[in-house]
Length: 324
Image (cartoon, rainbow, N blue to C red; front, side):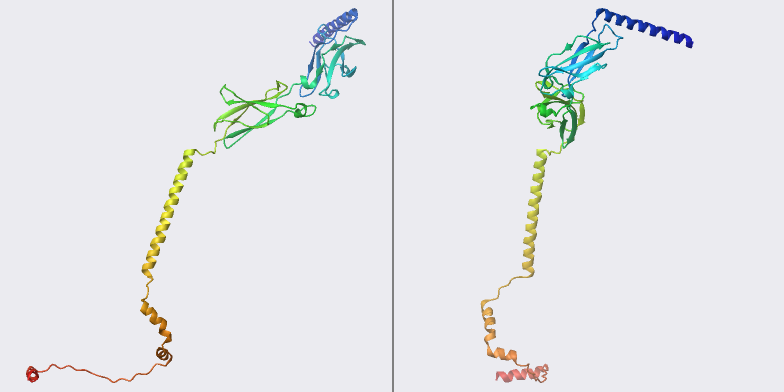
């Protein structure tokens, strides 16, 4: 079995070798190496790459390729005799320069015709990749934080003096989208409903062109902390009534407290004669002497009064005697 497989593999190799020999024979007969096909320029984020396809008529022939660039005057080689199907010109060009690129195929010391591109400027043909988008929501507002993609040469705002951001946002699950264009890379989305899931997609606008679209990012908007106007009015009214009742109660407490104090401790006014007497009290010499002298010991005798009812006869005789 293994012998059969080995014979089959040798047969395939023989067929491929014959095909390669046939292609090489055709090339030698034509005395000209076929040129690369589908030559194209790729520029992403200020990079510059030239790509191509091998000649379609010789699919099994391995070619080498040489790529060159021309700035002001003449062509200069960048990739020499490489089997790669692309050449990176990013490090050898300026973003504001005008260049022309070309490539040719090589085989066994023979070369094809050059395939040249049109004149190009990196800053005019470059394509910008998608920006990075971050979302955060706080107090009923959703903020979009946009980060420009990194460039291979300089920064995006150093190359383009004016860029803006095209923001599409919509409720998740709906097809209707709202559009917003801003120059700032931090944007607060307007008119969002609280506790609703929104999706955002961002593009960079530059030179009347747009970048690749960012990934669709979704976030639920937080609840708003704003208080309704009617609730504010109710709170103010209740606060006013509470303050009014408190002031009235304090006034009544002070008033009745004062009245009770006056009743318990009346503020009586003395007659004018008594005030005058008391004011002259200190001027009386007799009174002063009495106040300064020592108390006198008083002597007294015991006196008893007895009452005896008289006889009726004696009383009548006494009355007659008085009448006479």
